[in-house]
Image (cartoon, rainbow, N blue to C red):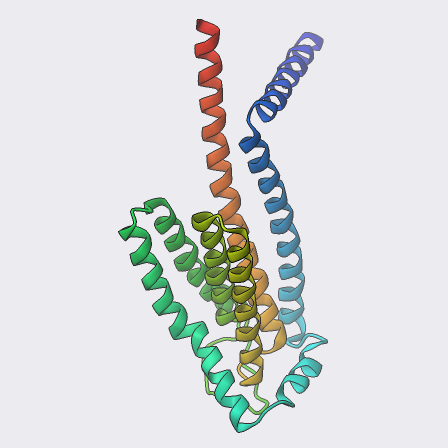
Length: 253
């Protein structure tokens, strides 16, 4: 038994040493590892927050901040503001559908096949996940002064979740393809401003509670982070395999 423990300890120690050496010899691998660690932290945190929020909705149907935030947002109602908010909310539905089609066409036209497939998975599965979550929670829509009539369930907001997934991906692609830091920051700011405004528009129109919007954001963050972590883990694994193969070839020489 002691010899088995020693062998296991030695194996684990050797693997740890090899991993450290791999990180030292490959700066991209170290960056990927840091991204994965941060991604896992975001996944755990967003999962905890979404679980707490969903449990509260299932138990009470209302969250403590729903009424106060709804009243504040609706206090800005006017014919002009209603037109603006209706336009913004349309960006989160028709706009995203058109934008997704254009981006897919562009990615495959430019032969960015991997990015195109990744985008399809993120968007389509995000939609499926949202539908399943709504069917599980079955929260009814708000009934206080709605400006639109919707019959499906309310939690989490599909507009909020879809807009986060879409615009976060746009911000990522902007950096990935341009490598222009200033332009990437500007695009990211615009994207996250649109994400926020789309969520506000759903509250303003009376079709979602603020907790629906927050739940949509958290679900979007969770799903997006899972995809990014999986993608970066695959890349890191490929780098490690290449590193081991090169080390073996050099040792053979």
